[in-house]
Length: 419
Image 1 (tube, rainbow, N blue to C red):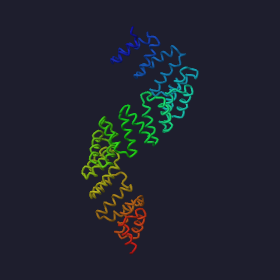
Image 2 (image 1 turned 45 degrees about the vertical axis):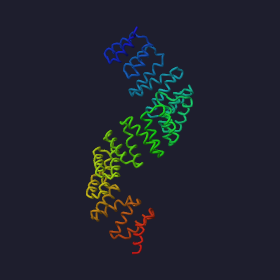
Image 3 (image 1 turned 120 degrees about the horizontal axis):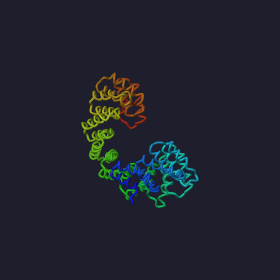
Image 4 (image 1 turned 60 degrees about the vertical axis):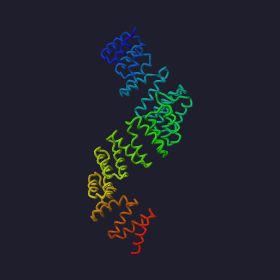
């Protein structure tokens, strides 16, 4: 005969909520406790927390000696962010209880949830002392080590599980986790072995992406490109791939393909300002200054990184000898007194032959850029043209200490020394 618990679950599957509620009320009155316990577990799993809570509270009132019934109540309290209530349930389970091991594991989750990993680890180690070989506890310790940036410790624990042919726990690939931990520890070549193995098992978006990132770290762009292109075909909505792929293609001098990729990325995510910045820079490399300007103007529309965009836009206008527009771009910046903005103003006013303003901005920029070789050379030559020869000589000699092979400046310095 079909139980009311079974009828309730069928009604839920059919989305007949009123019927499900009627059967739930009947189940509380007429189904046996074992059936109710199974229903509670199912309700908890599918997210009907209020009904699961009512059910387990009912069972706990009937059987106060059964401390295991406190565990699902603690889980429900955790799900509802009622942390103190969850601890109250767990604290009622003594070390002598058969439910104590599960209580320790749940307590470890709670302390991790509230940001006290040290206590979480202590609870897990106490649980491990009760069942030293339990894989789930060793996995939990590995996950805790991983989450607290102790990657080598995590690797050792994951590898211990792999040595026992345990490759998956709770749907998480131990092979992939080992690769990720090694990668985070900077051991990229070792990480590859695990990432490649995980891809042989199943090609997921994240595995393809992480494997590509490791190849990028190893400067093996061709391999990285291969995996990122594969991911691009498999899931074009995986937005993180586009900038990495475009940058790798650019490094390999595949500029046209890089442009196609980044523009596809913009289509997928039109609010990612870094995509526009790269598209502009790459377009300029392709000698398409009009497209570069267009991408930068679109970057401004996102409202993100406006200062960087305006400074880059001013650089573009300087390169194109659009001096007034370069000045206007800088003037739109909230912080237009940052060193490179001042330098750009100096260059623009110098080109417009407003030498007093150029001198003012060069001098202000010099406070922060006096160790930057390109600035030193440019400012030194400006000072010479302005007739400020001792200052020019000092700055250009300082420049030659950084760039001793610059024959042009060597000649200028020799001329200044002869005067």
